Image (cartoon, rainbow, N blue to C red; front, side, top):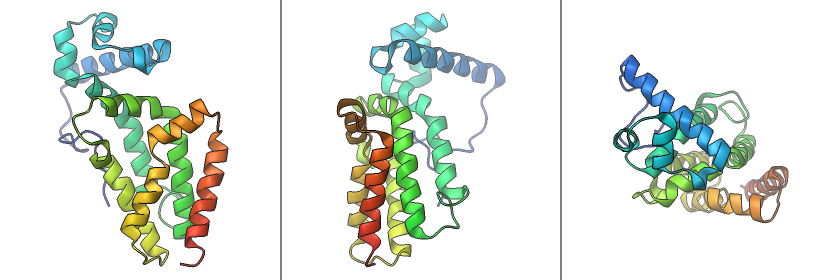
Length: 203
């Protein structure tokens, strides 16, 4: 299993940008992070970013393509780190722990991720031309859950069960529970732990 970029066509390990282009990109991203922190994800526009970074609006669109592209780029570092943790990191999230422990850790880490970055993920998905369920990172999460189910000895349609489990970690649904119903991340994590433990109890 290998790292999958959050934006198709921009694989990890590509040639680094020229130093001046990289600096300009980071300046734009820092301006975007500041705007998100000050005004919230929904309020940030490409016009605001161009004004804050003191560049033309065309420069912003050439760099990110769209508002969704901007949000995806803001997410990319966090997503790359999350993938590294569950693919290569230490147990129980990474290899080396029993499948049930890894599955519990995956759900807990995903809930924490959504709590921190979910608003960006929602904004990126809203205007993306790609079906969010077919986005490369989502496909990778599903594949990872399915692999752990198989390793745990569950042979009752692990592909579909992985799809069902993944749906419980859907960012929009998780954010709704966190923001609208006041459910704590700890309570969501406990629910996930009970769900997967019961599922694999008789596997």
